[in-house]
Amino acid sequence: MCDVSACALTDHIIPRHFQTMGASASFLDRQIIRALSRRSDLWGAWLTLHVWGVILAAWAMAIIWTNPVTILLAILIVGSRQHGMAILMHDAAQAAKITPQTCKVSH
Image 1 (cartoon, rainbow, N blue to C red):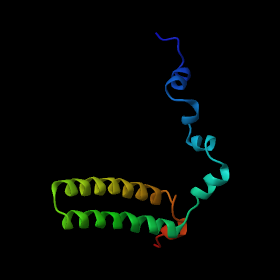
Image 2 (image 1 turned 90 degrees about the vertical axis):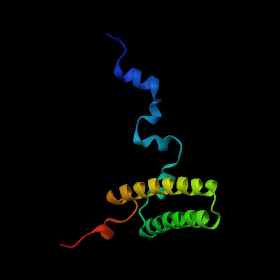
Image 3 (image 1 turned 60 degrees about the horizontal axis):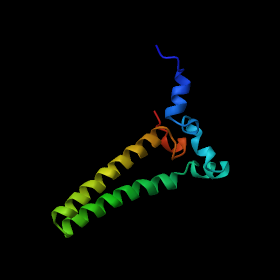
């Protein structure tokens, strides 16, 4: 049996300031955190258009300069942007990037 408490073990493995969602508060001013987490329909639309623009640019690059390196690079870029789209979908589901009124569906 181990005498070490779970809390002490957690503190040893993961520093205390990284154990909470408020870890950014120890690095950034509260006003900066509020400005960065503010909801904006325009910003959400820009992020969505940017993701699709990068995907189209990656495939255009692979089509224009067709060789194994550009095809591999395009695949890596598209994969990373798919991850970005998953994050945007998650944020939209939680109304983190857009205002809740934009997401309302009338019945």
